[in-house]
Image (cartoon, rainbow, N blue to C red):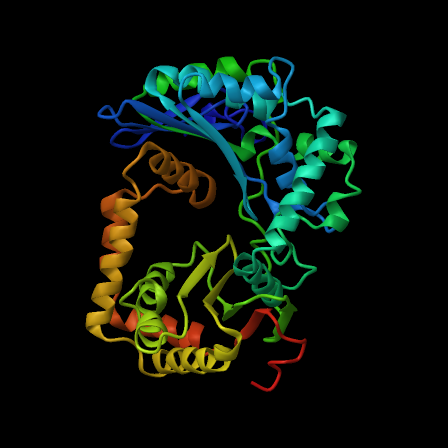
Length: 444
C-alpha cells in the first residue's frame, strides 16, 4: 500500500485488494472495514462471519457483560427485519446462524448453500450495523441472560474455569471478569448504556468480514458494500490502536487457592498459573508440551490419573492465550474424597516435567497431535472462515497451512523443555468447585 492510496489519518481513500495466498484475498474498504475470503470451489456451501474486535475485556466494571448482552440484542431486529425474519430468512434456505462472545472479540456467523450467500451477507450485515435495540427487547434479553448466568452456575465443570481465571487475574481485572457479566451488572444495565457501547465500539476499522466456500471475492465485496451502504459501518473512523495494552504488562495475582462451595457429587478443580500471549513465539512449543501433558488419551496426566488409577473420568491440560497474557491449567473432575490424591499426582507430574523435561518420543507425538488437530479442523467452510478471520483480526498475519506445520516441525526438544521449566515450575493457583468449605485446601 503506497502513501497515495491513503486518505486523512492514514485511512484508505479507496478500496484496496490484495491476494494473501492461493485462493485467499483481502480488501480494505474506505471505511477501514476489512473483507477476507477464501475460495473453495469444490464445496457447495459458504460460511460468513462478522468479527468485531470488541469483547468483555473492553468493558468497565459497571458495564461487565455488555458485549455479550449486545450479541443477544443484535439478532432481535433491525429497521428491515424482525427477530423472526432474521432467523426465518436463513432457516428457510436450510442455513444456520449464531453468535458468540469472547474476552477479546465477538462473532456473528452463518453457514448456507453457496447460492444463498447473498442472503446471508445481507442478513448479518443488517443485524450488526442496523440493530434498533428496542427497549422491550432489552428487557426480554435481560431475562434470558440472567437465566443463562444461572444455568452456568449450575454447571460446576464450567464454573471452575471462570473461578481459576479470576484467581489468576483478579475479579477486578477485565480478563478476570465473566464474559456474561453477573446479575449485579446485567440487572441495572440500561438500553441507553448498551446503545452507547454499541455505537462507540462497533466501528468499521474494528470489524473483519470473513467468508469461505464456493464464492468469488469481488462478488462478496460488492454484496458487503451494498448491505452496509448508508450505515454507520460505511463511515470512516479512526483506526483502533495497535495491540491491546501493548505498553504495559497484564497484572496477575500472587498464587492462591479459591474454593467455591457447591453441593455437588463431584469435585472440579483447576491447578495452574500464568501462560503466554498469543503472539509469543513459544506458543508452538507450549502447544506441543500441552499435548504431552494432558492433550489426549496418551498424555501423561490421562495415563497416570485415569488409566492407571481410575481416579477421574475427565482430566486434561489446556493453555488459553490472549493478546498480551495467557493461562495454563490442568482440569480434573473426581469424587471429593479423591481430590488430595489427584492433586498430589498432578503436582508431581508437573514438577517432573519442569525438572527433567519430556522425551523425544513424547515430543514427536505431541507435534503430531498439534498438526493433526489443526489440519483436520479445516475440513469445513466454517473452520476455514474462522482461520482467515482470526488471522486478520488477532494476528495481522495469515500463515499458510504448510507454514504453520513447518513452525511446529521446527520446535526442538530444548524449546519444549525450556517452556516447561518456565511455565510448570512457577508457584500455581488452585480453583476448586465442590462440597468443601473455604480454606479446606490452604494447607494441601
